[in-house]
Figure 1 (tube, rainbow, N blue to C red):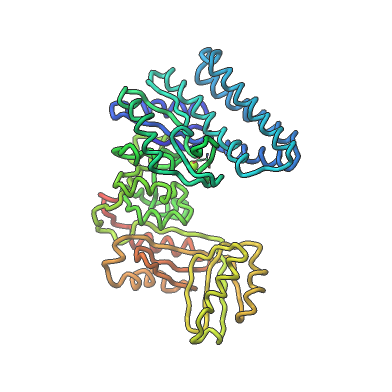
Figure 2 (figure 1 turned 135 degrees about the vertical axis):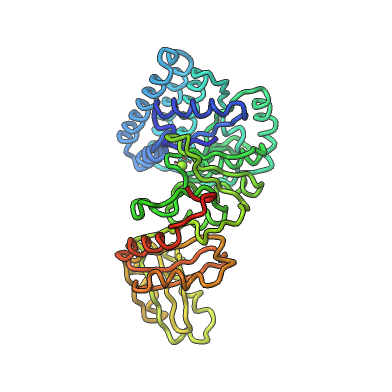
Amino acid sequence: MKFGGTSVEDATAIDRIAGIVKDRVPERPLVVVSAMAKVTDQLLAMAGAAGAGDLDKALELCLKLRERHYTTAGELLGTGLHTELHSELGEMFNSLEQLLRGICAVGELTPRTSDHVASFGERLSSMIIAPAFVARGLNAALLDARQVIVTDAQHMRAVPQVDEINHRLEIKVAPLLADGRVPVMGGFIGSTPEGKTTTIGRGGSDFSAALVGAGLNAERIEIWTDVDGMKTTDPRVCPDAHRIKIISFEEAAELAYFGAKVLHPATVLPAVEKNIPVLVLNSRNPKNEGTRILSHPEPSKSLFKAIAVKSRITIIDIVSARMLMAHGFLNKVFEVFARHRCAVDVVSTSEVSVSLTVDSNEAIPQIAADLEDLGQVKYSGRQAIVCLVGEAIRERSGVAAQVFDAIRDINVRMISQGASEINLTFVVDEADVPEAVRRLHAKFFADVDPEVFD
Ligand code: ASP
Ligand code: MG
C-alpha cells in the first residue's frame, strides 16, 4: 500500500490512512509513504538556497518544515510525543540544518548532497507515521528504506538494483510480515551498496512500491492518492466522464503522458512484468474501487478507454524541397531539437515537409531560427494534442472514419496513429478542444461497458 504526499499531508490524513491500513491487516500489508505534500519541493528549495549562499532563507524554510512535522506528530501522538520521537525529530532537524550550513559553506550543491537533503522528506514522514500507526493499534514496524532499496550511484535518478533489493526484502522484510508486523517505509529514497543516500527520481515512491511489491510477490499493489482513479476524460470538460474501472498497462502508459498525473505507469513496470495488478485508490474516499491496471485485461466491448488532451502545444512546420529523396534530413531536424533539449511529441511527414509538436516554450523562436538552415519554417502556438486510447483500435477497422466524422467541421492540423496502435492522436486549435472532446465523448462513451466503466 503506497500513500502519496496528499494522503499523508497532515494529522487528519495520516489518521485516515491508519484506518485504511487496519482494514487490510488480515492481508498482511506493507506500507510505503511519500513525504508529506510539498515537502520534497521545499527541501530542494532550501538546498538550492543554501547552495546559492542564502543561508537565512534556507534556515527559514527549514524552520517551517520543523514546525509542520512537530505539529503533525503532536496532533497524532499527543503526550506520547514527549518521548523518543520528540528527540529523534529534533536530531533529524539539527542534522538537516547542519547539512544546509555545510552546503552554504562549500558554496556548491552537488547531486549527492541534494539527494541527502531530499531524503529527509520520506525519512521524516515514515518516522512519524509508524508510531502513529502503533498508537492506533497497528503492529507497525519502521523500516529504513535505505536498507532495502539498493541503487547505483547516479544521484537524483539512481537505478534500483533489483537482485540485491529482492535479497534484502527476503532477509529484512519477509520475516516482519511473517511475524504479523506492518512494515512502514519511505518511498523515493535508497542507498548505494556503500551506504550513500540516493533518490530514484521525482515521484519515485510509486516505483519504490512497485519494486517492493514485485520483490515480495504481492497479490496487488495499491497506490493511494486523492482522486477516484482514472477518468475517461477531464470531468471539467465533460461532467459525465466515467471512472475507468479496468485499464491495460499499455493504455495507462499512453495516457500518462497527457497529464493523467494520477500515476506514471513506467514506475509500476516491475509489478506489471510480474502480472501483479496495480490499483489506483482514493484515501479520501476509500470505498471507491478506483482503477485497476492489469497487464492483460479481458478485451472490452468499448472501442476507447479514454480521451486525453495536452494543451499549450506549438506546431513547427519545416518545408524543404531538399527533403525529397534525401537521407539524413530528419536526423538534422531532430539534432536541432536535441541541441535545445526540447522534447518532440507528435511527428508527421510528407515527402517535402515535416510537422512536429513541442510543448510551448521560450526557446521556440531560437529553435525556429536554427531550423531555417534546413528549410522554410513556420510555427503556431495555442494548439492541443487530443489522444484517444484503447486496445480495441488494433482489431477494428473504420475507427478513424468514426472519429473524424464526429468532428468533421473542426480543423485538424496533424494526425498520427502510434506504432502501438492503441492510440489515435490529432492536433487541433486549443480553442476547439472542449467542443471536440465533448462530441467524441458523447459518441464513444454514451453507452459504455459497465464491467469496464462506472
Ligand atoms: N516525495 C517525492 C517527490 O515528491 C517522491 C514521491 O512523492 O513519490 O518527488
Ligand atoms: Mg507522488
